[in-house]
Length: 421
Image 1 (cartoon, rainbow, N blue to C red):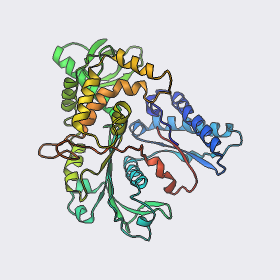
Image 2 (cartoon, rainbow, N blue to C red):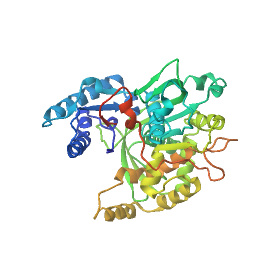
Image 3 (cartoon, rainbow, N blue to C red):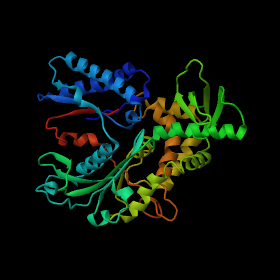
Image 4 (cartoon, one colour):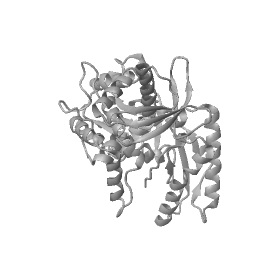
C-alpha cells in the first residue's frame, strides 16, 4: 500500500506545520490496515532523506522532536491500536543508505535478489539492474560492481562502493568483509528536481541582474521553463556581496525583497538555460552515469529510472517502459508551449468524475523537470548516453519501486508502515 503526498517535511518553516502534513498518510494507514484486519503489531517508521539532511542541525532536531511527539499522540489516539512507535523509529538516513535501499528494493521487486540467490553466503550471480533515482532534493545512483572492475576504479569512485552481505532468508542486508556483492551507492545532494529548480531560479535571477544591471527589489523575472499565464512569488532570504542568492517560495517576510516569476513558455530557451546553469554542478554526477556506466559488465540498457524519471514521463504523458529521449523532448516541447490556463482547465475537467492522479505542483513544475531530466541523463562529450543508440533510451520502471518495499528485511520482521518525507 502506497500513498505519496507533497510537499515534504523540509518545505515547512514551522515544525508543527510539518508534523501536521503527515495526517493524510496516517489516516491512509489507519483506514487501509483496518480493512485488512491485521492483528500483528505494525511499527510506524519515518525515515527522512535529503530534504532534511541539508538543514542546519538545530532545525533537524526541532523538527524531528515535534514529529516524534505527533506520532506518539497519534498512536495513543487509535482505538484498539495495532500500531507501535518509539522515538528511534524516526531518524535521518544517510545519502548512501538511501541509494543502497533504492538498489536493493528495485532488484528485490524484480526478482533479481531472491532468497535462493542470496543464501549460504554465495556470490550474487544474477544480472542486476542499475538504478538512478531523481528525487526532490537529491539524486541517487547505485549499481553492482564486478570484483575485477572494482580494482580498476579510481579511489574517488571506489570509496562509495559497499561490500554487502545479503541473505533474504535471514532478512540480512549489511556491510561485511565477507560480502557476496559489491554495490556502488552514492547520493548527490542538492541535485534533486526540486532543489535544482530553486538553484535554477537563483541563477536565472543573477543572470537577469547581470544582463540588465538592475537591482533585485520587487523584480519581475521571466522564466522560459514556466507556462504563459503562470506566475510564482519568491522571497530573497539572503544576498551575498558576490551576488549569490537564497530564495524562498510563497512566503512574504517583512523587510525582505520579493521576486515575481512569470512564465513565458520557451522550451528551447528553457533547455539552454538548464544545460548552461548546471554544466559545472552536475559534472561529477554525469561522470558516474556516463564514464562508469561504460565500464559496467552488463547491458547499459539495464538502468531503472525512479522518482521523477517515472513521474515526469508516466504521470504526465502516460509513457510506459523504455523512454525515447527524442519522443519525450517532443512531447515536452508541445506541453510547455501551452498556456497554463488551458492545462489547468483540462486538468479540472478530468477531475469531475475521478480522483486526481496528478497534483497541481507536478503540472506547474513539469517543464523545468523535463528539461532537467534530459540534462541529467545526457551524454558527456565523447560518450554515449545511458541506453540504446541512437534513441538514447533510459529504462523506466512501469512499477513504482522504492526502498520502502524491503525495509522489512533490514532487521525488521513484522509488517511496517513507512512514511517518507
